[in-house]
Image (cartoon, one colour):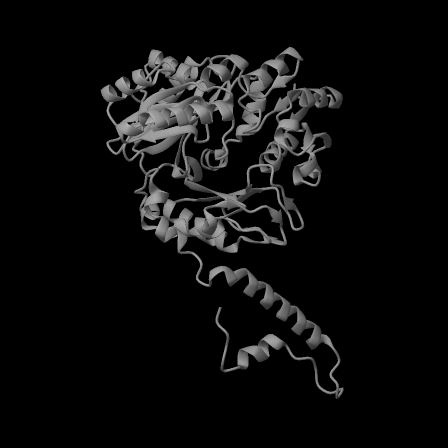
Length: 503
């Protein structure tokens, strides 16, 4: 049985994994870089070890250092979280060689599904629908042009080893084919060390829907229904919800069965996600498999009532999956907003800095997975994700209203955040109706950016008002000069004035 887990990650996901470990009576080990010495995950863990300089290549991506800490700390297992080494087959293989349990799939499953071209081949063999395109790497531009002419424009040029929108180009004009291929290959080489690319037919008005799966080492595979992930910016997810407003019960059953078939085709064990593209006519196609825990996993946990991290740990230590497909159901509706330290008014530029004040949202049906605190400095070296805000309610309409309330209550000063932008999405007619696809943000950008009723001075006004309040409290508490009467409440006096300032 696993008794101690090293979490090879940082920030909110590290804390989230450690919480489940603590509930299971499992000790947790944190690793941290120079930049993360004061991070909350370091404080939360039972033990913490420094692993290097701030750049991830010298710390969170350094396999030798992480394995060394696992051995020195006596960790039985390593949980990779998401990002960093979570889908690194060499890391999973190294753990196996060192006798350390990797809480995730084996190296072969990671490599076979991480290679998008190989994954497409496997899905075709398993009878899972895939987007029309190539099943071999594209190296010859002239051959690529001929293939695209057969498939028909528009198409997507994609990196075989890709993810996160890197190494990806959409082509609408035949004159742009050669440049798109060269650009995608160059970016893929820089990002993944592999310049192999392939071609897929571009699906008009695409909906991005993924299915959560769990598979044990004894041949049992289930799905935990879908997540709607179509609110994206630059191919990066911004908001997710479940159930999907697009889904019908028939479509859900069919896609769920194909998700299970996809996991079986990969000989998979652990938690994973099968991603699909769905068009307006409800035709769906396999997109890729993520062989790790997803950022958006909490909404599935809330609606299905399953702790996915605990299930990962149980599967990793060889337990038989106790969940049965016929016993699972979706209860209510959940929405997740990703809160980033970035400035939407400046093309979403990252906004690192010191958190001066934070008020986290509370109340019925609200979950907050975060890691920052007042006085914490958000480093420049990593993804600017601050937290994930998750709400649940019995209906989608009420869940949207609850998210609006939670975003309103969520206050952070010192850095710019995406909170106002996310709140605006909740007010969008297209989002509220559920009638949206992956073009939602670009189609509604003018509306979504109109979220600053007092311009850039809002935070300054709030700080000034807070200081005036503080100063008036001091003055009110001071003894009166004539020694008579009692200290007045300055806000009551303010309320009596005929003329009031309006912010």
